Image 1: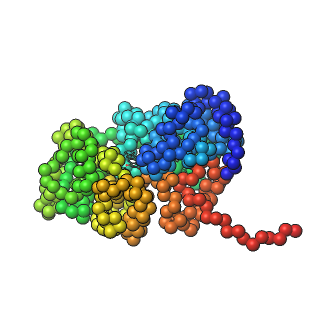
Image 2: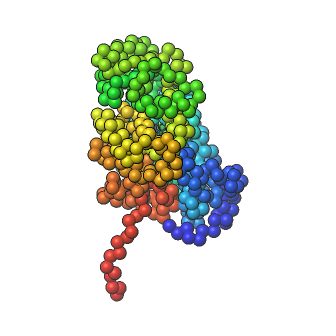
Image 3: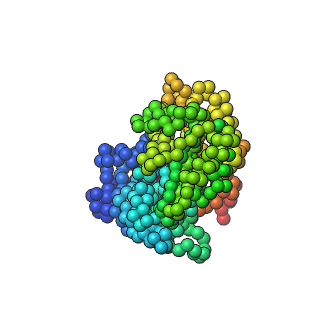
Length: 490
Ligand code: FAD
Ligand code: MLT
Ligand code: ZN
């Protein structure tokens, strides 16, 4: 990519003419928040933060940057867990924020679709759906900050994947600005449309490396009329899977979320999060949050859940359980789950492993992953939690009490490799929902090498031949070109 000597000052001048003064920020104080990722792993530098106010302005900005050969880092809420949305340290990549594209363009309760711009927060999109008597069935802990474009660019998972799939499963249409500034309007609300390659699915999960998502058509479902949330203490990790099977046999369609927590993570929440309340007196090593929901107003979710829990207690699977009696109690139980990430951040340095295995192998992952980490670093604190119904465990680790955080983080690759070795043996994935970003491209050759990586590079070369979109993310640096025999000219 030829940005060796871009006249960035002149480019910024042209961008200001196009986007207006509010659309181009260069003051270091304005730039700082967009240069460091949520976890504080990366501290990049950018000459400018672009804040276009429309798709047309995104396209114009992209054209100007492309003409100057300057790379663009798309940014939504900057809540990426893998450093995907921040510039590198070169000072030659501009950040393009979608935050000002936050309109809800349409909600259709018959189509069950929401047409929304990329800068809308997930929460705002959820609220727009609720106002129309529908539900946008995608919920993640960062939904107050994460924005629709970032949610789609990372194919976010979250708490309802078990019932409704990932972000990818909720996309019917996209509007995208390509690397040369072309606007693709694929905002179709069709449930069926079999006309060639499924282009929208190329951009979902592409992490800003193939195009800039400016709007989307998302699937909605009827809003639940009945809900029942419970918290259970389990006899073992294997019991977590046994209870899941019982709930699915009882009424899989009503099981909207099933989230695992270990005692270690809950203890961090009770220590670091004010207002967190212990729902059960029974001490246990393993807990789950159960969330049942249905649009049927007459459904006896509570009665059914009580039956399943009673039978599971009888079988020694469940040690204790509490069912929320109010919306406030439901929120309090969810807080215990959702505050894991923040509690961990406050507790110290964390090495995160957002991994997945076949659901039936989760207990084995927990046991073998814990053993591998404790063998590598005695005293390491193992804090597994997450979307067990999808086989997705956030196998996160905290430094041993008293260890220097920097020394612990210096072991991150060794720790990630130890966990990944177990995950690979169990036929799992090294990145279940957070994507690759800047943190994990080094793992791609070993996990997705050969034909897969070659196809990804071919797609990247086709859609962003000059490598202007989010360079250094998702794809590892190309292997050094093997210099073939020089062909004698003439
Ligand atoms: P950003 O961080 O701004 O960007 C993410 C990536 O997408 C970057 O590569 C960026 O360049 C690209 N991008 C952003 N906007 C666009 C666009 N419009 N077009 C093209 N590319 C774009 N993730 C989960 O999957 N499940 C969870 O349960 C979950 N829980 C979380 C809890 C907390 C407390 C936090 C802090 C994060 C959590 N995350 C989770 C991770 C993160 O929130 C998600 O990856 C989210 O989808 C990122 O959205 P964002 O708008 O912040 O994107
Ligand atoms: C979550 O599900 O809370 C996050 O994806 C996990 C994490 O913060 O590691
Ligand atoms: Zn998660």
